[in-house]
Image (cartoon, rainbow, N blue to C red; front, side, top):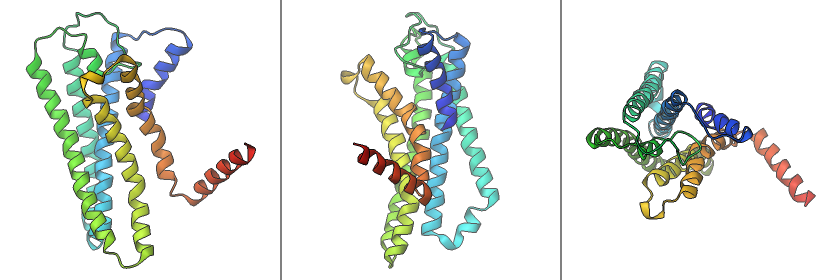
Length: 243
């Protein structure tokens, strides 16, 4: 979360403060690479966290066997490796294309779809292959999480005690909220119909999926902390009383 925000926001703030809108070619390539890396790794890690909840609720007796320290290390390494591979392929492909439609991006950071709009390359097959690879990777993670949560909710509803169901739901809901926010904003930003596309809408959506989820994730997860919940409640109560 911190990595993806630090990849885009500081440069955008610098440009805003210094009243400029430029970025070097190398800086743009680095921004694309790091952003693709962090976003891909985020999705992979969210999938691993979903598997952790699935095992802890549906197969609690096998938890230590399925999710020992070695298994966790392997899954974390696979998440970072897949993110790095995807980022490397996307960056290499994007910046190997000739740009013949100017160098102005309608975005506050270097985003691959915006860069591809400037290209006049005929290598559509290569672009299509990488697009299929990225979509397959993301879709595989989403399908796995949906399947896991169906099994989780079926198991939770069979728990006899209300306290047990509450504890299970409180474990899953923060993660489910983060996944829903992350996936829904990214899907809408990239798969929206061209008929409703506009520069201002594209800009708003890019902020929505690149800045808002990483900024809210720590807060969503921390709301399980009783002290933080009490502090937020006191802050809200103070605001309402002030008004």
